[in-house]
Length: 314
Ligand SMILES: Nc1ncnc2c1ncn2[C@@H]1O[C@H](COP(=O)(O)OP(=O)(O)OP(=O)(O)O)[C@@H](O)[C@H]1O
Image (cartoon, rainbow, N blue to C red; front, side, top):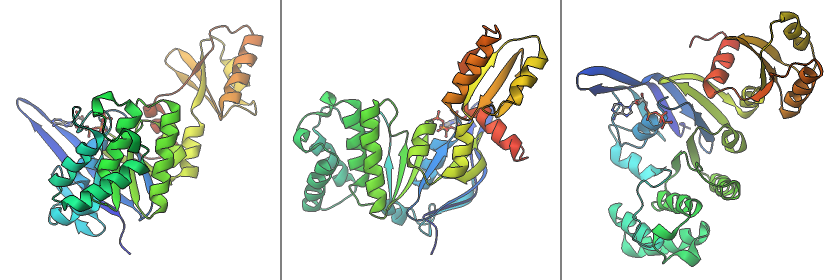
């Protein structure tokens, strides 16, 4: 059976007037199995949105190819559009003055769905995402979490089998984020496939079966959650400044320390979890090192470490 998504040597270059072109995707090959929740992690400008736009036929690739459930995104645009749903985050794409229900009806009309079908589906979806009681309120009165749920309902209206979510829980409070994630898991259990672009590593761990890390348009690695867990588990760090290298060496052999590295002018101690970081801080304070502070490496640093560990080239 073909994959839900298969991108092969995908390339996208944005030409710019009087400036160098930007290579947003560079030879990117990626496959997503049916029924998988696949996370796409990367720093700003990594190429996540570009990839999602190409896969949802909004943008043409400059090279390579991509298919959704075996259908080419360039040659079979119409079929692909019926198969995929795009759920954007934030304020994009909703009409504030219209009610939640009217937003869905409007969207259904754009998809040329039959009016009765749209009404039926809209009501069912509003119920599903917990907005039935607010269905007739204008969206401008909605909280961010409610908007996100409406975005999801909108993305589901034409019953797509593959959903692309771009930063779906950014800006949501933790309770709303958990509710949203639960909904995604339910939808997956019904047989849908998800590609979830996010900056949020906790979200990726909570939801995804596999995760791809991309940076500067290139795929750095694809791994299952256990593998990602190893990457993410290395997120708790303590930074400190000290002249004496022997101290760093002594730290390096402690059971709760995974690594100690020298970063411009300071030491960075890596631990598996927050408890480890706490123990490192206590250990340093006991030795009068008062410059120590809890730190979290940026995603890029995590990439570099992971990629370095695997001997890949960045
Ligand atoms: N229309 C455009 N014209 C020129 N450059 C663009 C255009 N759209 C995106 N880019 C550039 O392409 C690169 C990839 O952008 P993209 O939006 O795909 O990244 P992203 O991973 O989604 O980032 P973010 O997390 O900030 O949304 C960036 O360098 C960006 O500046």
